[in-house]
Length: 178
Length: 178
Image (cartoon, rainbow over all chains, first blue to last red; front, side):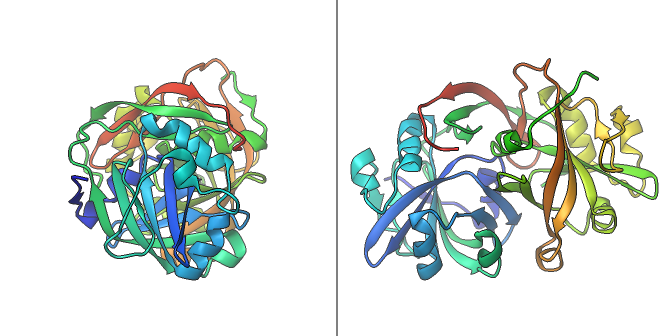
């Protein structure tokens, strides 16, 4: 896995466009993964990410208890696996096995990286005070990885009910915006 | 403006993919607009949207004081105007005039709709308790509009520093996911 460390100051550029992600956790040695689209950047550095993980998801308790996870960013080649992860539960399914997703050890957290994804963000829970009311976790990215061999990763963006927009062309405008 | 009302239960399908939006406000009869990308869905119905509006933005005080705004969703044809709105401030600039954006009256809030955008979400602040700590507003969409003549709106998704991903093709997978 030819990954390189990505400066934390660059993390927002991966998530701000709004891709579907795979959120991996590990609790008591038991890994799990869920599909997630409801996330937003909240700070550049340290990178803070707000995300909604429903308490109906098996991952909710793992995230709440371990305060750690990895946000893995898939591309269109993984779309069927992403939908599969969204349609099953870790309660009764080993999703890694069922969908052929490969785990690798993270450097800073116990939750695994998913090697098929072109980027992996190791996170710990920064603020859980909004969880009780909204199931909304604020995560801090503490280590980011990217596969430098993927020159044009085509992320997928969920429009509901299994309809996805696939990332299209890139345009560049002169901007003072960060 | 041939807009039709969009059921509130469908709103998440517009924002979940992560488009750049134009957030319009009006305070003491003075309208303003800012570019925003840091937003996430937080509930299907009523549609709740969490969004970060920095207190360095002129819109921050308008949103905080009036507790109302409109989220307008632009397409790639408006990219230069979107960047323009991001690079200027309502403190010293009438952005509607400068960038040729057209206002129309909203039905439920005082903030204006932007007619060049294919969708407009009239919002009021649902929860401002997280604003002090994170500049994070939770908005409720109370009226949604869509231009039904726009069959394939190409949203833009900010990757930082004026680089945008333009929405590409749509794929459909069988899914139980909402």
